[in-house]
Length: 197
Image (cartoon, rainbow, N blue to C red):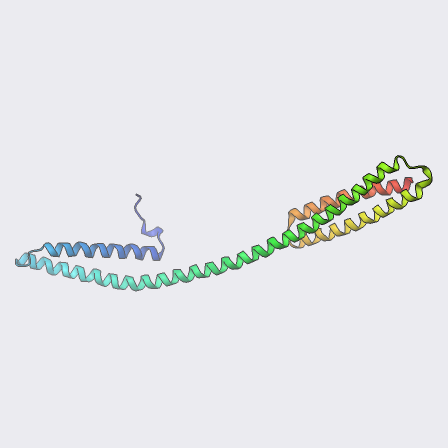
C-alpha cells in the first residue's frame, strides 16, 4: 500500500492522520508504562518522561479534536452547498431537456404534415397521368393549394428554427434548416408545374 503524503491531503485529512498518530502513540506509551518497573530510580525517571509525553499527546488530541470538529463542520457545509447547487443545476437541466423535447416535437409535427401533404401529391400525380386536358383547372387548384401549404410549412419550420436558435439547440436548428431547404426546393418545383399548367 502506498504511503500517504500529508501535502496531498485536505486540512480535514491531515487532522485525521495526526489524530490517528496521536491515538496510536498514546496506546504505545501506555504499553511502555505498564511494563516499567517504577520501583527503581531509572524506571521512575523514565515513567515521568513517558507521562509527560503522554500528557503532550493528550493535549495534541484535545486541540486536534477541536480543529477536526471545525473542519468536519466546514466539510459538511461545503457538501450541503454542493448538493444544493447540483439540485438547482439538475432542475435547470430538466427544464432545458423538456424545452428541447418540446421544440423537437414541434418539428416532428411539421414533418408529419409535410409527409401527409406529400402523400396527397403522390396520389394526385398518379391520378393526373390518366386525367384529360379539360381538367387543368382542377390540377391547377390542387397545385396552388399545395403551394400555399408549403408556404405555411416553411413559416412554421422557420419559427421553430428561430426558437431553437434562441435556445441554442444547434442540432434542432440545423435539422429545421434542412427541412426548410427541402420545402423550398419542393415549392420551386410546384411553382414550375403551376407555370407549365
